[in-house]
Length: 264
Image 1 (tube, rainbow, N blue to C red):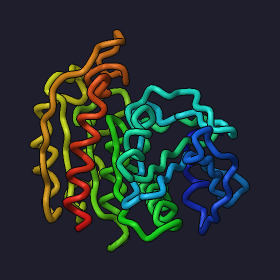
Image 2: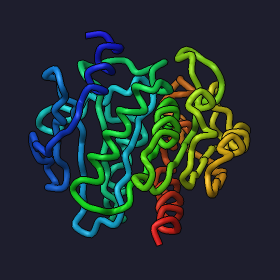
Image 3: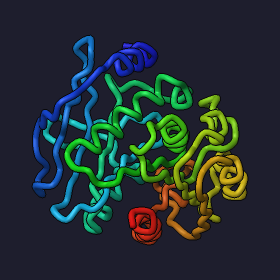
């Protein structure tokens, strides 16, 4: 199935019910298949600690294909939002990580109205098991999805949005966070950039330009970090400063502190 029909099926979905496919080895991870009209399902990995006080919907970068298997195994575990999931739950934050359908490539689609509806459905799913605050967090290409979702979120459903190493310069996906309606974001926002990021489509110096574009947000904070290990030849790869490789705990701690400020 091509990527465009996949998006169409998702938008057609009217409702969903929790239907866990399996639980992870630590008892906190569940694979949930969200039923969609037309017979398709969107698979998500859902982690909820007993002391959860907030939920974050994690939107991965790259093509968006995480490769979540029925038993909870993950084919592509390197992305920051996947790799760091235990760090969030250790701090009482529930995590929702969506996969794509039929391993579809999401490049070029994340700023579309259809994808905004997909993210809206993920927000609804995240708020169903509990009434805790829900945040969006996107990294790299996933920040386009997070910006788009925040721009179109129903009033009162979203506590805030976090954009990390955002794609702000045009590249192979032919879209950036500026195509995702930043001026329509009406929730608090945090923009994080790594001074050591060498990804040409996500230059750290663009962080303040991204923040300035969210003119309707009640508050926008820019956080500059530094460091990371280079374990790949790809400067935009997950195992590099672009993916916070080696400084995951520092970044998660910073985001959690910001989230707590916006859940009081």
